[in-house]
Length: 214
Image 1 (cartoon, one colour):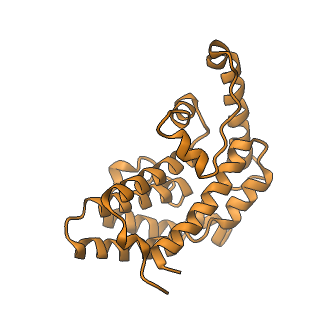
Image 2 (spheres, rainbow, N blue to C red):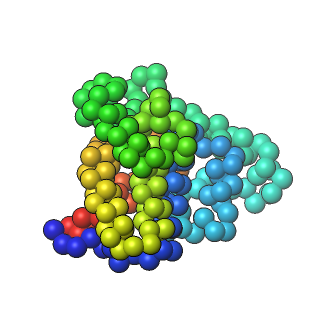
Image 3 (tube, rainbow, N blue to C red):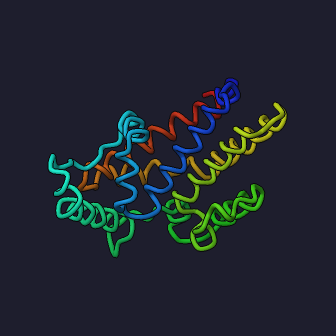
């Protein structure tokens, strides 16, 4: 195991990393709505999203149509796909660590998440943490909080301590989703959610190298 690449990241890189974790968190937390698509199509976000492997729904060349009937059709398709993949009622893939590790909700994954959330004192930024702390979206958001704390850490020792926290957290709570992400990618009916699953899996693999130096 080598030295973590993340120790060499500057403030801007860490801020960008935090923001990407937060973006992925939003994508996984709820079905895509108009506000999310608008964000993903914005000039600042779209190039980064597509460079990472994300695929946006096809847009109409008619702006008026894009804002009305076609947009609603796209949103309906995405909502159906999200619900079918992640919410059920049957044959779905619950995005909870406890389900994939123990076959049922709750358990040690929930306890561990609450410990990290308490340690980082980030409850206000995690509106859903009380009811589903081991949801992938919450876990991604907490990692974003850690990256943001690193970006604002003034002392090298403080940053090094946060690296230790991040490595422990990543190993316990972001090493599990591969099977979930592969299942979503395989069964998605929209290019958007297929690409999001593939993008998230590739991103987490890259992150493992960055944090652990593997």
